[in-house]
Length: 228
Image (cartoon, rainbow, N blue to C red; front, top):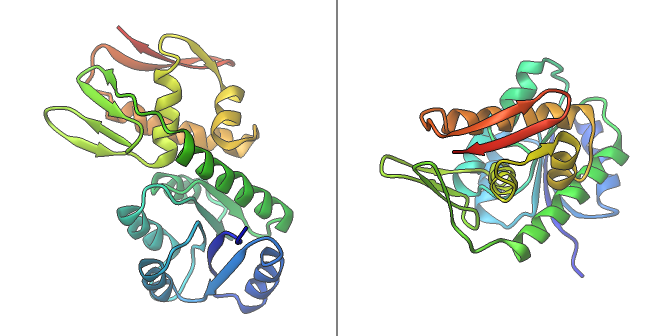
């Protein structure tokens, strides 16, 4: 089986060499040290996952992710950054990233994250439901990440779609946080929990005008999609 192709964007020469050397044992890594060149390469070639530094020449990681999401809502994106502010992490997730690792990071953790997201992408490609769901005034098509009503058509990221799909399959039922995290990320830890909160907020914003649809927070337990 051919190795999965990873687009790795990092301008720190030493860190890039060490990281790419370790990743090459598991994946086919294409390293680029410039943001603009990285996006041009993404447009020209096929990749299975992107690992992006944030502080880059010409085009930063946030800008790359934003442009990538315009072309591909499915490909997993992992940010690597020395930026530790909560606001930066939230910004990255709102742009559609799947995870955000703070430097100095563990190579073992990075490899594990990549494997989790690649496995999830493979499964979603095989097991996507062909059903459509009605959520208030919206029609939800999980197979193509679409929410539509008479006023708008919204393209979700793969993670948003997977989360909403999990909710609608369990409408009016409490889902524990750990259950959601394991279903979507394959792991239950603090930072993934913060990522989940970001995605919940984004879905709530979409449904804010729907009087009969809400995502309830169940304190110390989890969440419940209520459709009346």
